[in-house]
Image 1 (cartoon, rainbow, N blue to C red):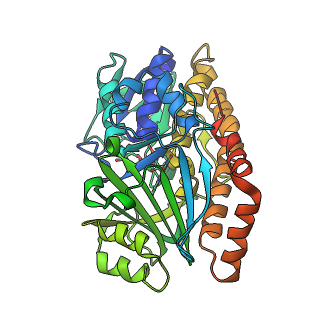
Image 2: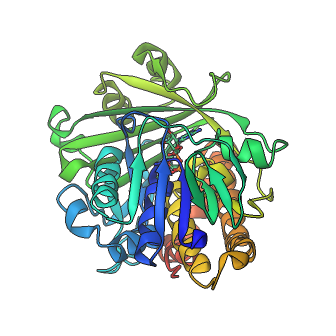
Length: 387
Ligand SMILES: Cc1cc2nc3c(=O)[nH]c(=O)nc-3n(C[C@H](O)[C@H](O)[C@H](O)COP(=O)(O)OP(=O)(O)OC[C@H]3O[C@@H](n4cnc5c(N)ncnc54)[C@H](O)[C@@H]3O)c2cc1C
């Protein structure tokens, strides 16, 4: 039956997770991926409990466990004084079946790819851009494959979205993420982070955390900048970043950690406006293709992973080919309110982190007044999500 075969465009975190979730529900899956090899930029990823719960459920914990770091807190610091404003517990939200993980992207992508390639119901075609889809007798014809549905998990510059919804375009946020890593051993003991550090500064912020079983440190510095070509990952000169995180504005501990990185890359932050269309007939979008967001809630990949689980659940309720468009509509209706709320929170957090002058002082006081417990509780609706 055509409806038991699903084509996915894109083998990123969203597409690979969707393939595993669909195969676990009895579907056959073909993934078209334009890249020859799945290699993520050398960078880290925070995987919150709402995402790790799904990956654990798909059986990925043994492959990931040797590589992850499980932090117990986020230390929120201010560039103004160099001190800690507040420490938010992550241990409180994490569960054995839903840990908070810090992971190198290559380790996550490697674990997902290995699981996909060893699954008899999934075919991964590398170096193969997704062909155009046309209507077939019972479903869609995509290249040589007949399928009940086409899922666009092909990222912010999605070809599937461009074909289905040409009016929806990524928008440049005016912000650039500088990404770099260094060996933990290259930092003095006093600078080695054990959990997540979030440094808030004037019109910039910095996130630092360990990954690769504590051997490597991940740094992301967010600053304003001119748009780079879409989807690019351009090299960045350390001198330029040093000037942006100047001695006058940033404490030596943050600057010394930045200086330990040998190679920076710059990633322009584009977003997909919220509230747009996600599905049409037998075509649906997932992950960044549907909702690329600012990374300030550390939830973009997590939302793609949640999308994957909900998509598989929605599709498995269909009895025959004719039920697929309704199942995709159901998927989109279930996902959009939650994802839109997360997109908004990410934007709001960016504004809060980048305050300066008296507003930064007021922010720091407000955070202290709120206290760690109430700050932690504000994340519960995100982290406690279950299928
Ligand atoms: C600086 C930064 C930090 C972040 N930190 C976090 C974090 O801590 N936690 C978190 O949850 N999220 C984080 N994110 C967000 C996260 O990286 C993304 O949301 C996530 O990677 C999106 O996955 P995806 O599979 O939807 O898309 P992508 O990763 O973009 O994958 C799309 C895939 O589709 C392929 N493709 C594209 N076009 C075609 C085509 N025509 N045919 C076939 N294949 C195609 C691409 O080659 C790619 O493999 C961060 C993002 C940034 C920029």
